[in-house]
Length: 306
Image 1 (tube, rainbow, N blue to C red):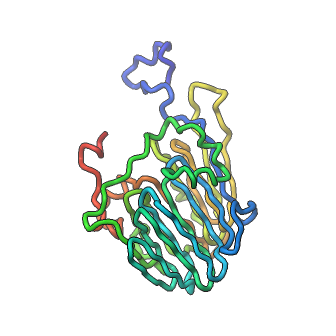
Image 2 (cartoon, rainbow, N blue to C red; image 1 turned 90 degrees about the horizontal axis):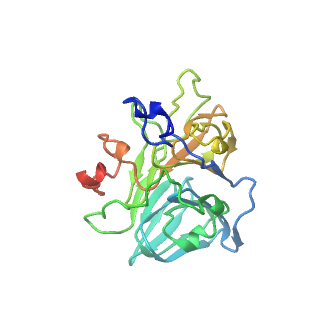
Image 3 (cartoon, rainbow, N blue to C red; image 1 turned 90 degrees about the vertical axis):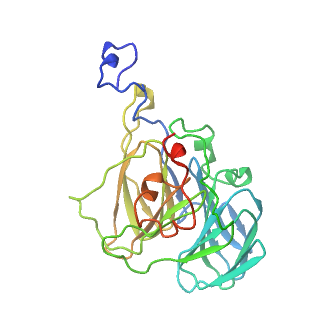
């Protein structure tokens, strides 16, 4: 890249965007295994961590604990990651019960979930709710919009209407398949079954995302996140490489344009979900990758190329 005053900026091979490929946004972390909870009451302990468009609410629910949303502005997800974690969830006049190890898509409006025996619960929201944003321990990182990320726009509503949708998480990896991945109008969740490790270091996958960030939510084991910030024109914004090891439970927000590739630390029982808001188009265009693709349409063709 070149500044526009540099004659080389006129070359056909030059990138015309003076900040192309660069970012000054830091990584952000929710280390729930050591950070103080944001909320503690009879219902349990709750932590809140946000990215530009995604908010993670990790909760250690006390037996009989109940968590509700009143007048929620948009659709959101809940994950009950562990087996033997019974729950009852209600929304739009409907109630569903489950044994745990499931993901739930929750419609806008009022909703409530109760865990009679307690356990772990993760709620995944967009950042369109100011009251939730204010609870995030890392809210100051996003006091200003990341210039690399466009304004949030939800995906089309499901033709069958908003309602509770429940899906079982996978217990084993399916050879040759990624995921499983689910999406709603606001969130995409890629939550593979537990994996072994460590990773083959000759087969890493360094990559970056031009216009969206990524949340890596560790729920079992430990992961090393390798991250590199590309250089832009402004040296004052250059950042050194980071190689944090995050244990379970934790959330790492990897900014748009940061080159990254993660690897497991423990030999067994490692589990990490990658979460995006809004859903990723590139994943959605792959045949068979999205488990509930038949329930949620993609944006119109002209919106995909905008």
